[in-house]
Length: 225
Length: 205
Image (cartoon, rainbow over all chains, first blue to last red):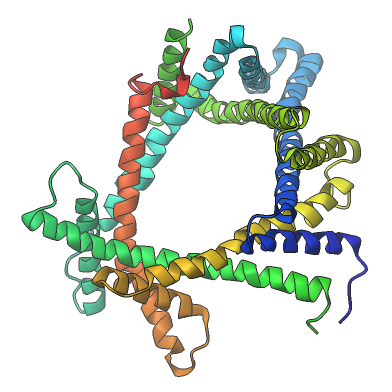
């Protein structure tokens, strides 16, 4: 057993034990770690995004626009002036902060409306293509592949499974008779998917748990070789 | 101005974003590229609102000496250390800002996620009591997937083939049904928002 002299590892180890203490029940040790995590994560992500997004995107682009204007005046190309457009994003962002002032808080809806509208327009097309059309296109498979029995069976199962799965999600008609039978078959397929997802989740969480155990017994306490 | 203008903004920006996909024009490309970046910039300001809200809630607890106010002091301490430490020391590797990330943030986050392994064990016990055909299907599929990466001697190869087949055929079929369902749901919701039918994002006056 070789305890690490690294104070950072000690802190990490003690915090790991603090979070694990929740398995016994809610307690002050866990709550301390939780509160620390809330504060640190909020601060960390704000500062990181400020430097990597706000400064790197907005400030940098406005700076480029300003330099272009100083060096080339109005003779620069249209694309060079587009860097200025980030100011528009900044203004919309600033309007968002007006939410803090109840009397003029409604102005923040303008920026929210821009975000909601643009995102809706973007998702409308991307989801229609990726989740709708492309999935349907990939389900339109040959029902018979000459000389390849397994592919034929696989294609049939995919077509039937997708159709029955969709039938299950169709709630405008009561699940009775043939329609109900197809929906029930759809549940079987869905259970296979949920089983696979469950298996994956268990594996990933176990992997994380092994990682934490390795941290405590290996990195911190030096008990593993 | 309060309710009509946001609806117009949503319609114009949403319709333009959707239509630009079909009309390859510089204006469309410009709006697509820059519009998405503007949203990210707006997001930073929105995050500032979140930080303010967190600060206010925690500070209120401390000022009013509400139950557990000591934890709010810890949260505020962590928040201010990062907010001040980031600009003060920078966010490069080796700075106190990143040391807090590696020695405080990462262990806590990883442990929180790993906690689920314990709860998933009890959930598995309840789900895997193969009392119905559906539960048995779930159990068998999960077992095959979980044992996929574990050496099982002579049956390892067969198990891997079976797991791959499950993932590529029946699981894929149901996944497609789920994806198509999600896609249609999102498309319908987006359309409702763009056309001004869905206005929940505006909240109440």
